[in-house]
Length: 105
Image (cartoon, rainbow, N blue to C red; front, side, top):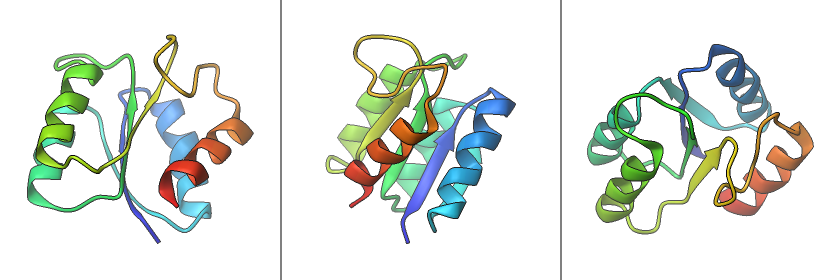
């Protein structure tokens, strides 16, 4: 069982990914803002962070850079459109599961 942060301001995306993560046996904490993800990583150990690439406030990329500084070995998975993100939207749930398994092993 892994401790996972799911960071998205999109309620539909959060609900879908939360269900998958819980079904896979992970402990999931959901938040809306990347800045809160940074605070959570500073205060507690997590095994994986999933960040929606279209948040508001602190950008997902900036949050990932800060998280990598605080916790260098922690994987960060971006969900959204763009070439640098391993899982694009609209979300293919099977692709998400494969990516999750490769990162959370």
